[in-house]
Image 1 (cartoon, rainbow over the protein chains, first blue to last red):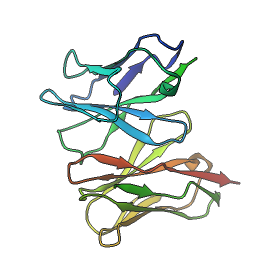
Image 2 (cartoon, helix red, strand yellow):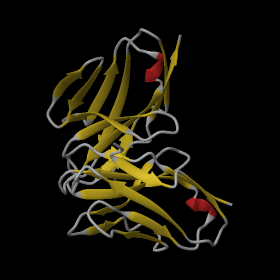
Image 3 (cartoon, chains in turn orange, blue):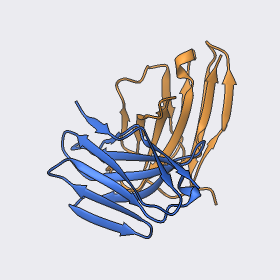
Image 4 (cartoon, rainbow over the protein chains, first blue to last red):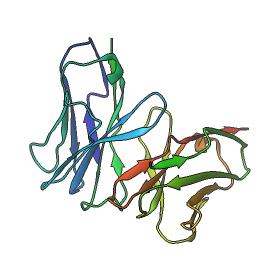
Amino acid sequence: DTAVSQTPKYLVTQMGNDKSIKCEQNLGHDTMYWYKQDSKKFLKIMFSYNNKELIINETVPNRFSPKSPDKAHLNLHINSLELGDSAVYFCASRYGTGDTGELFFGEGSRLTVL
Amino acid sequence: GQNIDQPTEMTATEGAIVQINCTYQTSGFNGLFWYQQHAGEAPTFLSYNVLDGLEEKGRFSSFLSRSKGYSYLLLKELQMKDSASYLCAVSDSNYQLIWGAGTKLIIKP
């Protein structure tokens, strides 16, 4: 029944490691997103992706890369993790390709880099 | 630059009414959203306004004035479960969502 699911929910790792977070949506949505929420609670968009276009927030380091095997999945891969990458990462999806519809969020993945 | 302003924190009493304000300065406007986020959980959609005026949905209402760059979320008959952060977000001319930092609402008995 889960609409947008992310795994893992918690991730603790060492600096310099590479990790991935997986996201799947079963809503038939067209567009998926990755957001980062830091300790100050700002939600910052990292990527938006539909089957035609990947939009990257230019402030996101190229150590972060989205991978979409199909329309229902958008995984986030992070290379050479840094302390500042510690945050909660949310996957989200919506119908259509514009930003006027309701966003459905996953439960979040809390990443802690030691 | 683009900016969304909300109070950082508010406190209210169970059963009372609270109004959470949001002001915005964005390049274009394609609607304003309110989301609720309980601690440790994902944001969930509350409302969407694109035209001026008040939208009522049960105990929650959202108001928009595009000319003033202003919105508020009104919560009536407050319940303890309403303790959460409330996030204001604006869709700009490129349909990109600009998010505020959220208002943490504390409900006291």
